[in-house]
Image 1: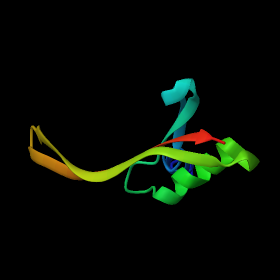
Image 2: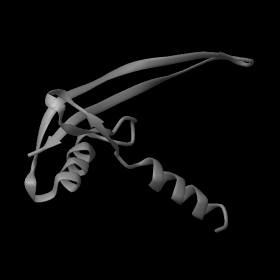
Image 3: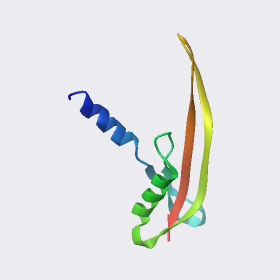
Image 4: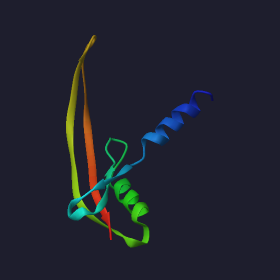
Length: 93
């Protein structure tokens, strides 16, 4: 039980879309939302945007996503995994 709680908290914290305020064109403020990773999806980005802008709604300024491969050499051989990137920039209406 002592081990299960930290693992649960780690999963909970890593399964969230993150956002930060950014400057966008036209001198406006926007938000960069990141929902990258194999445990996340685009729905989490849209949910985060909805929470940020609430009833005002939002407009997508930019949206990027793709899959890449990360390969690293370590002492015991080569390690590789896929990397799913999902990011969008929004502005509230």
